[in-house]
Amino acid sequence: MKHVLPSPEATQKLAERIAPILGVGDVILLQGHIGAGKTHFARSIIQSLIPDQRDVPSPTFTLVQTYDAPDFEIWHCDLYRLTSPDEALELGLDDAFEDALCLIEWPDRLAEEIPDGALVLTFDAPDQDSRTLVAETDNPRWAAVMDLIYG
Image (cartoon, helix red, strand yellow):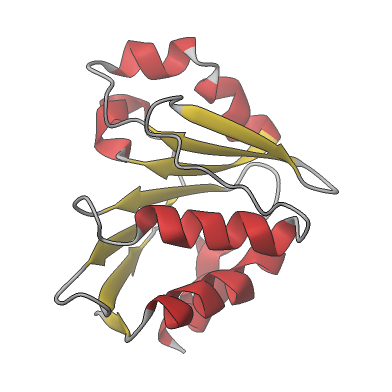
C-alpha cells in the first residue's frame, strides 16, 4: 500500500509526527533512488527532535552525521559509497543500532547486517514535488508509526 506525499511540506509534516515516537534502538531504513526524499525525511526528523539544529547536511561524503538529541544520540548514515557490509560495521553502526536512533540511507549496503525489527521506508518520486511512501516491517513496535503513515 502506498501513501502519497503531495509536497515536500507533507513529507516534513509526516516526519515531524513520527519523530516524537522514536527512541534508542530504533532503526529506520530509507530506500529509494537519488532525489526520492530520503535525506529530506531524515533531516525533518532530526530538526523536529533538535529544534535548534538548523544545519543538517547530507552524510553522502562523511557517511555518518551524529546529533545529540535531548534523550539520545541520532545517527544519520548514507551508505551509498560503501562496497561491503564490513565497511558499515567499521563505522560502529552495530553499536549504534542498540545505543542510538539510526536513520540509514541506502540500507541495501548492509546486506545480512540489517538489524531485525527495523522499519523500512521506500520513497519514490513520480514527479518533481510529490513522493510516494511504502512502509514495511514485521515488528509490532512500529504499529503507531504505521498508523501515522496509513491511518
